[in-house]
Image (cartoon, rainbow, N blue to C red; front, side, top):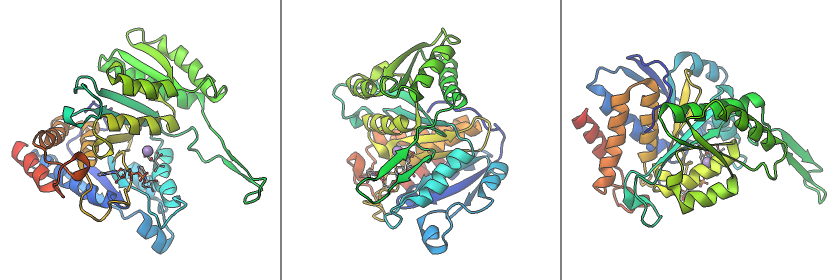
Length: 361
Ligand code: NAD
Ligand code: IPM
Ligand code: MN
């Protein structure tokens, strides 16, 4: 897993745990158990405090993100381990918008880091591709774009209805995510960075992305940077993923392209992410959602959540423990200890991962 900007590097950590809905409630406790096992023997005091924010509470009490939650997370916690939100009983998805997008926006977690790394060649659907071909980072802008909720209806429910959803892009917002991607590439001596937009059609919003990209790239002559339109990027990722090290793009395109990239390395069950503001309380979660179609069956893959936990530990500066978590997943994959989404039959892998982490810590 790539290094993430540090929060503190200190010996103690307080982690807020928000399992959320559906399989979030299954994979998150699994990840917590593996973190505990990896940190227990290493004199790493780590405290987990769980919050029951999600659909059940929303339906019961009408509360999504409680008053004071943001300040509490910002001031009293180093990081947040998040599961997933989304429940068929809340068709508006209002609680998810309040909680997940609320945390991303209001904690100003502007970097959505979504790495894709093929951990075992068996899991790519692409022919003749190996782990050396599939190892890239998508940086998704995480606080702006089409997600900000600016818009409205006119003549709603009539035949003349109009619906407007604005794409909001600030120079500051575009510049800081592009700069973060370049800094990341430079720090890891990764040569290739691709900025992706749709400036041929989105001639205002993505013209801004073009201009900022052209200015910022002049400061990074050591990074081989280029631009691809998002439709071409989607095609190129499938044709030849080995050409990509770092991709930076807007909020909506990053959402979509990171699911596509995840599938190149085994699917959503294996995909982690970090919602990061360097130096501030940040949130780590699997890329997948609450998967109502498999929730409650005990077959959800916890690997994405464990890999997100590895990113969280890296963020804390706990490099060895982060590596151990990732290694536990690699070993499980190598030994074919997997859930049905990866072709296995192990309903829960938690005890296997916990044993591995305890034995090797
Ligand atoms: P999803 O990611 O929940 O599921 C997509 C498919 O992948 C399903 O077939 C599911 O069974 C499978 N899958 C996902 N994670 C898996 C895992 N860990 N193990 C095994 N299989 C897994 O996406 P969806 O079905 O489009 O959305 C369901 C709900 O989740 C919606 O309410 C959506 O808004 C929400 N959602 C939330 C987040 C989040 O909280 N960050 C992310 C995506 C979707
Ligand atoms: C994700 C999800 C969310 C997003 C949804 C649930 C709003 O798909 O985290 O990728 O689009 O950001
Ligand atoms: Mn998504």
